[in-house]
Image (cartoon, rainbow, N blue to C red):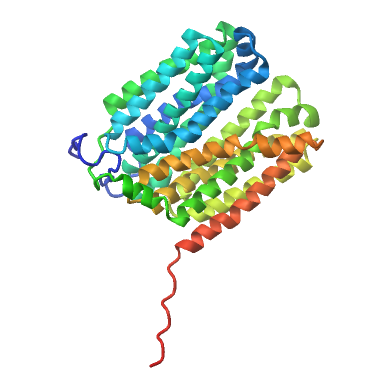
Length: 414
């Protein structure tokens, strides 16, 4: 295949170059994007593990240090769509490398300055860059493959995030306890720069497509089916993350699992997420709505069983794994639906679905806090997750119904 000029009109709206018929292996670029997301995503999971050490080092309360997590999340929620618009006419490879370098620079600057205000600002800025990269990476992955493999390619890219959950956060936390909390973040900086160099050197150039148009991108967002996918994204993400975020508390206080084993049980969720992405990536290109409904139903069942069987470790531990599988089976299907509905202008839609994912994560403390502050048991958050998952199903079915062609109107009698 001949290289296509990187500065062509395709920019952010590139169409995929045809892949060889019957090819099963995904292009190298898809795996580079997954590694990049692993490197950057590790910073999202790392801070929670070293938060007490951070609070002690910069002399703030644990609650104030928790604001660093919120700052990053807010940056991710609001960063993707504006960057997608600004970078619409840029070559994708340029946008990817730039966001990686900015992300690494922000993390490094926060570590060098070391004060709470500096960390707060740089975490927010890093969240903006991370959101920009995630949005462009999702669109780029789809542009590198034929449409029948779009969901699989998206699943592989997002698997970098599940690997960050399994390996990046725990490994960074372990490093932090041996060489200081900043050690793990310096590793994130190094890995991100290595990934940026790999993208700059080895990312395949994508073929030219329609002239990028901000107006067309904004017009695409007016499609109701797209907003149904965004709603399903928010609900489903919140449904499994609300249980995951309070699993440590549940395992400790209700299940009675020793503290030394809790981290390993939580890692099972990440293993399940990786398996779910592999399964979802394989089935979502052909049966996206089956994957959405099955995943949401699986989350509901697993969440309810965790709440009912919370005192039985032999039941809860495998359910944590299955919750990760069910939760992440949906992700490739979600990306597949977004890039199918917005195939003529995918960049802003791709950025918006990333924001919907992060918004689902960010809103989790609200219903959980209401339940716990009202005196409910920690198992109540699993019931909330089950309800949110059930609500996802009619939204997914409504999106499918909206896409069906309407029967032709019967001819009127003369």
